[in-house]
Length: 414
Image 1 (cartoon, rainbow, N blue to C red):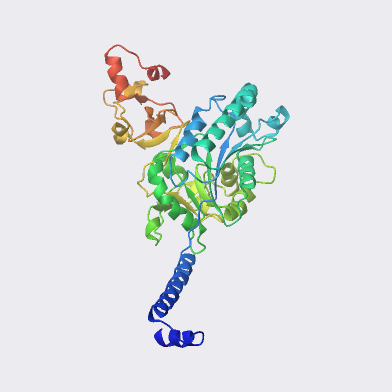
Image 2 (tube, rainbow, N blue to C red):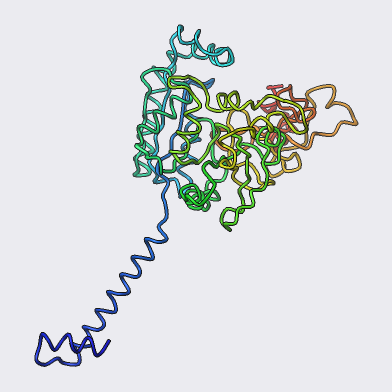
């Protein structure tokens, strides 16, 4: 740039010293480098997770807040989520008239708790929850807000209220979860959060929804209801995603707000009080079978399903669970129980008491919400967790206590 700089300088001064000319040239080079850096940063701009929404409602443990406390602590323990604005959305308890108007499946499941726990929920749980939220905001220095629904909204109502409260736009990515789901390995998930958010934000990517699984991705509950298959995405950072073929679940998931409103919330009529997955399964014929090979829900979910090609599962086909379900437990390989310090099985039925009995390859681990450790593992005939367990494995430490004559409380649950 010597000639142009010298010429430019002579138009302003009669005489230019070599030092001044050198400083002038260096400044121009620095400005060009800065401009290039700005353009490069804009070209590779990354997207940030906008908000986290945690839904809560009356539960068997009401008014105790230990379960939702474990959920919130696992979020705080994840570096990539620690400073993200968090909204805890508490549902209201329905009136008796509203209970009578609900679908039978919801009324039968929840009505006894709504009736029995109304006072404990409103008078004890809410103040305790507010204190937890305030303490978390103080500890993290971030935005943590408790949103209370003025009227009963069910899960879909809490999600809608949370999206409204956080102010997310259609292009924003949010994390939706529930009070009884705890991140099992916050540090490991943290390293993948930026890649997940970037993939969901990118219009060139098919990813709109990424589910975190409470079970091992190859467990019977996963293969029966989610049917994960390798996604084969070209992006190296997303090699560990499985496609769900349009299947959807309400468990913890990352999603783009615009897609979610158009495809998930829109499937639930305005004012509907339900769980999103219930509505989607009914809408897309998830549980119907019209002939041919394969599971009925697999065929139904794919046929004319607008979610097909957009829903994915975090982790590979053989990945362990990403969540601890603090109510229903997590289905894991029976061979891995020693990793959770669980001892050999003890029979709970005549089947398991047989000398020829062998445990099913998959077991359901129940978690302690306070310590995060495994309380016990239940083994089921044919791996069907909807039927009574036939054997139980308890912690190794408990076995040692029993050998000294101390009965572990967990064995009384038989």
